[in-house]
Length: 238
Image 1 (spheres, rainbow, N blue to C red):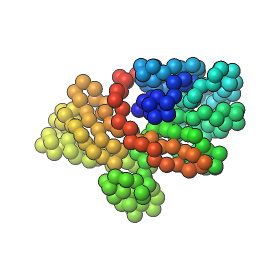
Image 2: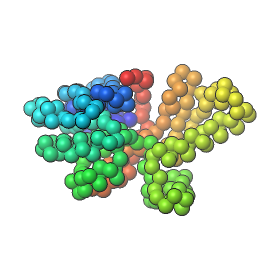
Image 3: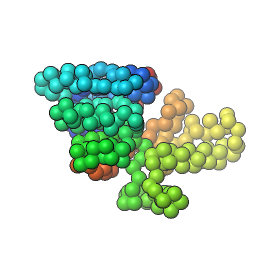
Image 4: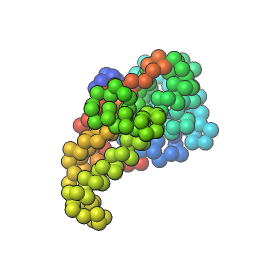
């Protein structure tokens, strides 16, 4: 979804990629992005890892600054703890191009670290939850969650909620709670609409095809950009 959003919505054709070499999540995320972005005709003009322990991207950013013309976007695949600091490093290096990442990004943490300087940042995630979220199903979930816990739900709360109701749907369809019966029912689950988007499973690929929320941060404020339905999802990889 991130690659399609960058290529189709942001109209980006030239991208630099940085990723955490010691984190499978980060390595897999950038591999998905690179494969899909190149398949659409995009160009990866720079691609480099950074250390997992005490990460620094100073050398990588200096290398990116030497590229002429500059990349139109930086895809930064990093973990949640390091992301705010790494984004700050990018901006301190004088690079102002859009930064795009995955669901390890957290708008609250990034804005907390950078304030109004948090700008031109996008990330894909499982769901964006606010009181004014357009879909009625999500608004009801947000209000119920806030009433119970006195805070807005995170994407992980949305995933947990959908997991329960996805299993319930599969058990009803299977008329059984045994593992094999539920697994078979999940393989034949289509158009399940949850609070993290709509999803479809298939017998050939157990990873669901689902919509993704795109969140943007501009001038220290986060907002919902789009619900993105990827047209093609690369096979699982590291």
